[in-house]
Length: 468
Ligand code: DQQ
Image (tube, rainbow, N blue to C red):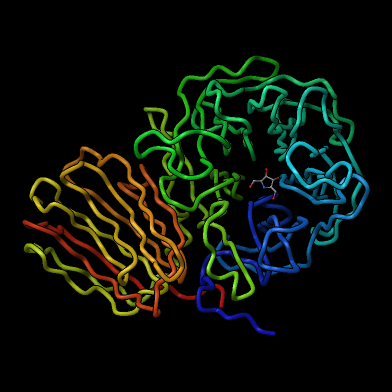
């Protein structure tokens, strides 16, 4: 049976069919990029987790590969949960969490999790080698290993939930990848009593700091911050092997949109630090489930750290190769309550806009996609807002951040059938969310409400389809 592709992306990795959640095992190995993902191949709902697999030469054009890991051994009978990959002496190693529910129960308190490894000679077929780190005493949850090599050792961070329901990250090490030391250090732990788990930790150098990237569960929203069911974000600090992690910058969200979770990073072949995330959120409405698939990755984003300890995230340069049909949008003043048509069918495209903030007094101005999406500068409240309204799919929400205090505001937006990613002022803020235009209305317009807004310049491109 072929998939209904109404919402299927043209340049984002999505499952060939079935369910996808977290990116796993992102790596450049033996001349190819590999992306694995949490996958349920038998339906578009979450179920016993497998690792789906795809490969690419450029992180844009993806080729599906056979499923890499399937649950079924004693230690992973209820799921091969999230993890990471390393390349060593020509072999590809996958570290993942063996998930089982004790006593046949299927609830949080009966979870038993261990860290496991599987190895491949050809990068496609994997042989499971079993548990490398058993569940340590005093933890209810213990999952999502991220492994890297540094200073003569292999290191692994794992997310954990302690007996007091607090999230933390444990750090393990080994010299040979297979025999891990059971003794661990607590690398970082939550100071927020509501946060009961830190999922999908990643730990990596950026600039001259070490970033701890993770997805906390339980954080309460504060005004317009942390509004998703679960969050994503990072700490910045200093670290050296066998030293404590010294945090220099407290938790910040990495993306401000509705659908961004469990990001993982890896190094591109030229050393750029790239991140991809699951572009959905637990308990989101996922209209494509009725079409036999669900979930996709964000675009690969290059991360750098600025002088203020903020991560700057921009779409990888390679994406520019997809640009076609360039249309320059000349400098314009949108007078009050008018709109300007940019494209009637903006299904697979990129838009760049430079607004003159000093000479724009409109209450709100920005762009619309059909009737369902507005991305705008909210002058009155000094915010940037992404709002969605799809009554047919019971989706209606908005997310905001502070409006940067710059003279101009540069917006770069990527639309791909059922997704929108917006990059502000060269990656200082990003918004990612899924979009589901009703009646396939993808009309892209600029608008200004009350008073005028000045656009300094803009460009629109259709993007070539990398995935059909
Ligand atoms: N999803 C996986 C877990 C991880 C969670 C299970 C995050 O390993 O903690 O699918 O979305």
